[in-house]
Structures are given as structure tokens and as C-alpha cells.
Image 1 (cartoon, rainbow, N blue to C red):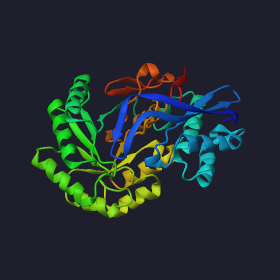
Image 2: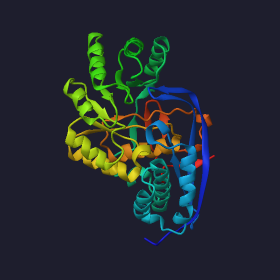
Image 3: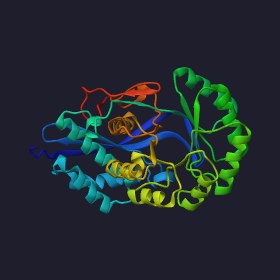
Amino acid sequence: MKAIKIKKVIIEPLNLDLEEPFRIAIGTKYNIENVLITVVLENGIEGYGEAAPLEPINGENQATALATLKSCVEFIKGKNVTDYRAISATLRGVFHAQVTARCAIEMALIDAYAKVLDIPLYEFFGGVGNKAETDYTIDIVPPDIAKKNAAKLAKAGYTVLKTKVGKKLTDDIDRLLAIRDGAPNCGITIDANQGYSPCEAVHFIEEMGKNGIRPILFEQPVSRFDLQGMRFVKDHTSIPIAADESVFTSADAINVVRTGCADYINIKLMKSGIIEAMDIAAIARSANIKLMVGCMLESKLALGCAVHMVAGMGCFSHVDLDPHIEPEKEPFTGGPDYKAPFYTLSPDLPGIGCKKR
């Protein structure tokens, strides 16, 4: 392929309002403060990438992501877009901890590259399919609101609902009972976001059992660094355990495999970047560990990239890519067509398929 160089790089804040506050065990978010990168090729093609920092999870915020991306502009300009892997490897060595910024660069480069090839991104990832079904998250809210939301989501067509736990055991049980009452035919997954100690997590599982609640999976019950504690939880339940915050890199995935502490690994682009995410998926599949995919608080651009990965690779057993921005407030048009709970990707839209309004 003829070399196609990057002519221009634009970095700008991406500030968006959430439909409603998002509450998890480690805090509450009221809006989205992300960063958008646009790479413009010498042939006029534009590629878009998004950084979605969430400081309690990945240690970054909008200011640090902006600073990192701006410092990379001169390095990126003039490079061949087909050299996205080499560019990523260099940036990983320099900005190892700034993963959302690196992810945004990878996303923009790969989006542009797929547009050069005139293929949708799911074909870049393997082309297995062009659809994905997601769950929807009910955050930490009172039981009456949880029940109302669950009923509404079940009516909309969702078959799996997720809720956050890890703040207070009795409140968590009450919320789960409310969700079950509101959507009795839906499966439930739970995510503690590191909120429990190993013994608390096992006690919580016992209390769920007493109340007739059996989740499809239990995500990150303990601290990300406590793999032995997660193994303790896994050894005391038949509910599948998912490692989320414990896995940012392929080395982390190998440690999870060696420890035998998880049945699932949750891949998030904003934890790992795109290239590292593919490496993690390969490790998990070789170790017979199931894959799920999740997201931070992202626009349809980054969500769309993850949907392409899921559909294209075809190896994810659970998908947690629910949108949190009202469609009319999205800064992009195009991208995945979302009719709850399904995403459908068009074969006629190259790259991620998104275009700035």
C-alpha cells in the first residue's frame, strides 16, 4: 500500500451531559469530560479517537489526557497511518500510564486506516459479524427507583440487567430484590467495583442465596491488586467471577490466568487501548477464560469502536456497552445503529462510521 501520511492532528475537549448522574461504589459522575483527537491524512480522510478518563479507575482526568495528547502531536504528524502499531508501541514506552490518551490515538489511527481501506472497522477486527447485544446498568439508586428502571428496561427489550454493588450490603440486597421484582425474566449481573473485602464478598453471595438471587456473574468483587482474595471468592461460589480493574495489560491477564482467580476477563478499551485489548483477548481465549467487554462514560465514538471489536472478533460472551448520552446530544452522527438492546453496524460505513456534527 502506498504510504499515506498524517498531515494534521487536532486535540480538543469533549464535554457532554449524562442523561442522569452515574453512581458506583467509588463515586458519582454528573457529566462527561473526555478528549477528542482528529487525525487528518494527506488525502483528506479524517480519523477520530476518544479518550474517556475516569480518575478512580485509570488515574487520568481530562487535563492530563489533554496534556498527553497535545505533547504527541508533533510526533504523530508526518507518520504513515499504516504504521499504527509502531506508533502505538513507541507511545506505550513513553506514556505507559496514560492509557486513555494512547487509546484515543490508536482509535483515530485505526479509524483512518479502515477508511483508507474502505472497510467498516468490524472487518478490521476479523469480520465475524456486525451485531452485538448489550445489557444495561442500573446504578446505585434506592430500591423503588431500581424497580421502576428495571421494569422500563425489560419492556424496552433488555434481557440482562447489571447493577452496581459494594457500598452497603443490606442496600445492595434490597436493590437486587427490587430489580428482580421489576424485571423477573431478566438475568442480572453485579459489579462491586472493588467495593468488598474477600470475606464481605462471600458473605454477600451467601445473603443473595438466602434471598433466591443468583447473578449471571459477579464482577470485580475485591481490590484489583488482591488476586488471592478474588481466588478466595471464586473458590467459595459457583457464580462466575469476572476480573475488571485487575486487568489493564496483557501481563495482568497472565497473572489472572496463573492465579486462577476469574472465570471472565472484562476488556475495556479505556483500560488497555485497542492493541493491548486484542492481546488480552488472545491470552484469555488460550486459557479458556471467557471474555466480556465494558466501557467507561463514552460517546458513541468510543462505544462504537468497542461494538466493532465485539462484532468483528465474535468471541465475547457478555457485552456491557450501554449508552449514557441522549442521542440528540451526541456530538457524532452515524456509527452503530442502536435499537435497544441491539447494536447493528452498517457494511457501508467505513471505519467506526462516525462523523462530527
